[in-house]
Image 1 (cartoon, rainbow, N blue to C red):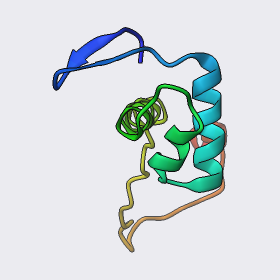
Image 2: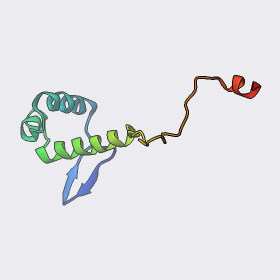
Image 3: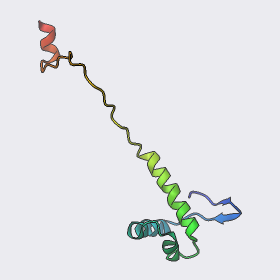
Image 4: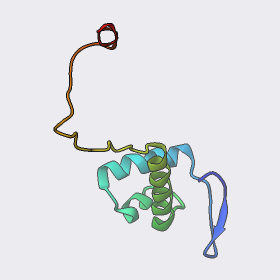
Length: 91
């Protein structure tokens, strides 16, 4: 979270780099057990930690947008040759 913001009548403060690192490590170890993760971070609630995690995941997905290949069928009349373009123009 880049800035402090007010939402649903609560103030959520910016995560420090140490908190972010700890959240990433604990999530790798514990999975989505937000209560347990928040219990290891001083003055953080499970909802705050989970919200932080969801926002970071959404941000990562946007950065790593996967482009799926397009599959199509080639007509049986299509002829594939290994000739180079230069050789074809010489004929």
